[in-house]
Length: 311
Image 1: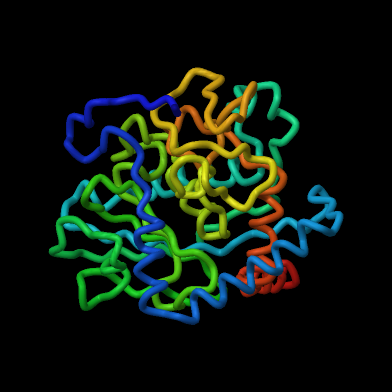
Image 2: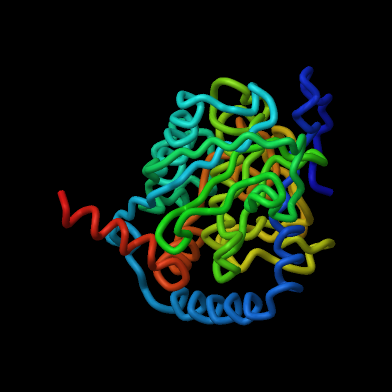
């Protein structure tokens, strides 16, 4: 069985006992509402499968800087996170996606050679601040619509939109996979799990919730594939199949699904461990993200290219 660690919620009552990601709940809802989304994902999986068969030198792919808009939606002063907290989150994203995070040294030896630079960075281009009467949003994308207390995204074709707000039901964040409706495209993070200062609360105070959710935005799945009893996978060859999510800060190795001796890759950003216990993307995860970027989110690359020409 996967090792799971229980923890008491934070003193402010905003932090759950363990990581909860709402991406799959939001995803299933959107698949029902927008049949074209399913077809878009199937096409992307086909392109990704072809990319896996072709040799790619990931160290030579272009570095892409993704223009990002942050929407702060707040009902209290605490939820109106400051500019320093926003800046701290971008520092984390840029370290994690470029594999320059110093805690990568904690990756167990069997996987150390798999730690891979995604060659994706993030540039803050705009911050919006929207007061609301909603005291906790769900995964139904209410935060992305003015009529339901939020704010609509800005140019999702060429910008990553990232909402920061209070989320209910213990959810730390969620994201939309590539190919979904533009009106809801982007990433949502609970204000108590955003960045590394201000309202960020342990054990989710190192900015890794955004790293995890932006991984979904670039088509990464949870490492256990959101399927029980070793019956599925995440579509990535170099993340061992595992029984389910790991929580807290497990002791290595944690063996499930006959994946010994190294066991579950719980140090991966796409597991459910605490921020202090996740350190890496693998080479095949990076290939999957780069394929999504280049084939399903090309507008992000076009904007970066225009910015380079103007300099």
